[in-house]
Every structure is written in C-alpha cells, then in structure tokens.
Image 1 (cartoon, rainbow, N blue to C red):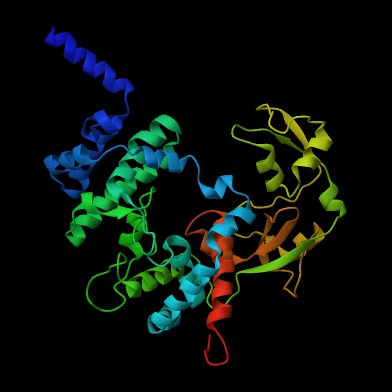
Image 2 (image 1 turned 120 degrees about the horizontal axis):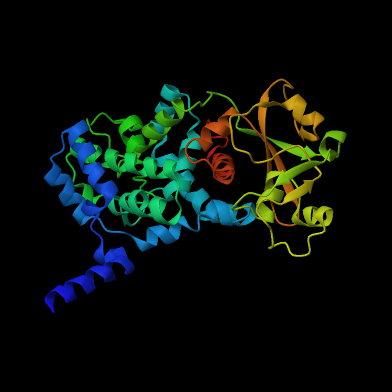
Length: 390
C-alpha cells in the first residue's frame, strides 16, 4: 500500500503546479547549473543545491511573461501607462533632490540628465515600484521552466541561466542572501531595474561610500544608469529622434510579398510595414482579420519597413526618397530608424537616431524607448525654466 501511495504522489507531481512539487535541484538544467557553479566559480555544491531547493516556480511570473505591455498594447495605450502627470511631477521632484549627482553624471558620462531621470521613472516610478518577486524564483522559473516548457527558446533559456549565475555571484560579492533579493518578474533589480549581469558590469559607487547600491541609493542608481548608457552607444550632446511625416511615393507603392510566420497577427504585420489592417485586408480580400495561415503569402503595397529595431542603417535622404521625411532640417547622410506609432485613428511617424537606439539597449522595444524619450522631454520642460539651467 505504501509503495502504491508513493507512486501515486510521484505521478501527481508530474501534473500539479510545480509551485507545490518543484525542486529545482533535481531539474536536469538545475543539476548542470550546480556543476557549472562549482567548476567555474567554486561554489560548494551543497550550498547551490540548497538555494535551488528554496527557489519556487512562480505562476505570476509566467502570467506576466505571457502578457508584456510592449507586445499587446498599441502605442496610445502604452504611452498612457508611463507618461502621466504624476510621473512627470515625480520626475521633476527627483531631479531637484538629486541635481548635484545628475550634473556630475552628465559631466562624467556625457548622458543627458533628463534621460537618466526618465529611465528611473519608467522603470520604477522613482523607487515606488521596484517589483515584488523574489529574484531567485523569477530567474529559476524563466530559466528552468518557462523557456524550456512553455515558450521553448534556447537563447532566452541561456540568458536567464546566466542571470541566475550572476545573481549568485552578486550576492556573494555583496555578502547578501540571494533568496531575499526582490525585483521584477524578469529578475530586474533596484531603482534602475538592472539585471544581475548588468548590476555586476555597470553599477557604480557614485557617492564614494565604497558600496554600489542601486537598491536604495539614488546617487548610485543615477551613476549606474549613466554608466550603462556610456557603454551602450550614447552620443553626448546629440538628440534622440526627429518627428517625421509620410507621403506617397513610387517607392512606398512598390508591392512586396510577405510569407506569414508563426506568431504573426494582421496587426503586427501592418505595424511592421506602416500599413493599416484594413489596407492588408483590402489588398488580399481577407474577410476575417483573425484568420491567418502560416506559410500563406500576403500582398503588401510597401517596401519601407517600420519599427524593425536595429542600429540605424538608412540615411535620412534615402528615407525621404521612400516617403518618410523629417519635419525639421536634418543632414541627409545621417542614419536613422523609421518608426510608426499608433496614436488611435491616425499614425505618428518618427526617425530614431543613434541615441534612440542606445535607449533601446536598456529594453529592446520601440515603444519603451519612445516612452523614455517623450517622458524625458516633458520632465525637462517642467524642470527647466528661467531660473534653472538645463
């Protein structure tokens, strides 16, 4: 009877949520992780095993990963979440309180103070929302469950395994208990929401107290964000983006064929090519916008691809020839990224420059980078005035 009872419990653990039955020390990737931490970093196997036993699968992390705002919300809804009167006021207050350190960061790293303030505002609303997940739970869930079972992506599995490795190294270096560190559902930490490897690589002790603390110390968070940008292509003294307008040209109207891939929706395809869903439906006689077949070819009356996040590679002159012009004078040889945002019934066009791309290195989403940029401009306009030099 006892053997049968234990067998039944074992079978149930295969089907029940691993929040109840999980033990990451017995997970195949967990076992390999223990060996890796011992071989490369001389972590005792028993201590790593003990940490993996404590870590729990988080269903809330999984749910959050399946509905990121950057993917499911159009720009006009996404913008409302981050660009609010209260957040702008909080940003101005943060700037005033930390004016000296922001000035030092701008002088030392060349990064615009308004951008630093905006990043901290978008990430945590100036420390008001630094996350509520145990970081070790989030990283184990993502490395050992989510990207191995739910959304099988090897590159992301490796990424979050590396983050878990860096979390344990960071905790050892700072003499902290890794099971007590709290962060976002993706494992980001502190005022600037650094991933563990970014914390170890780019966090700085900016106030000279011999401890790089981006958890509670605004000065260290300011210096760390600036240092991150300095290492990711920020151009000192340069602008971020230019407003644009789109006009019909022969280049825009040249037809192209697009083969539908897994995960495509009519909205995502339309957004990528600067079209509307209605235009694609009309050109392809699609009656139901929700019914697409992988491998099917769609006719798209455009060649200019919008919102393909990469380092700017098209000259402003070439973009103008293709029907996207800057609304202010610009060097035609300068490289830019064509951006189209859904503002409701209309579209809004931008030309993203190198500093726009640098912002996206913090979080690789067009909407994220634009939210940071626009929030920074609004904070600057309120902070700066006749009595304040910016």
